[in-house]
Image 1 (cartoon, rainbow, N blue to C red):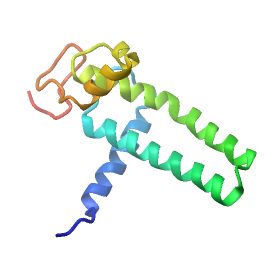
Image 2: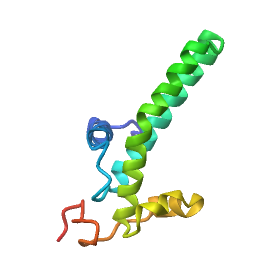
Image 3: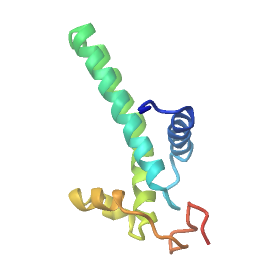
Length: 126
């Protein structure tokens, strides 16, 4: 059994991440689950890698800590934008992203299969 990721999956994850970063200030429209979760996965992995590198290689250097904080601040606006677009995909207002457990359930839920009040179906279905 082959458990490695193929190149198409890797390209898809990276292309989803780049698409979110390019639409960093777009709070309208809809975002698919794959777009949202690719962005969350890469942000989590990068943040953890930098943090652990700081702890194990630099003994918790303040400079690296500031860089981690700067990275998190830079990614804050795109994170909010993609979360709002994800809520729009399931037919909810972006304010639902503020509700702790329910927003996670909505982020895992399949989006509306047709056009809704927030825009066209991102999967391209009529």
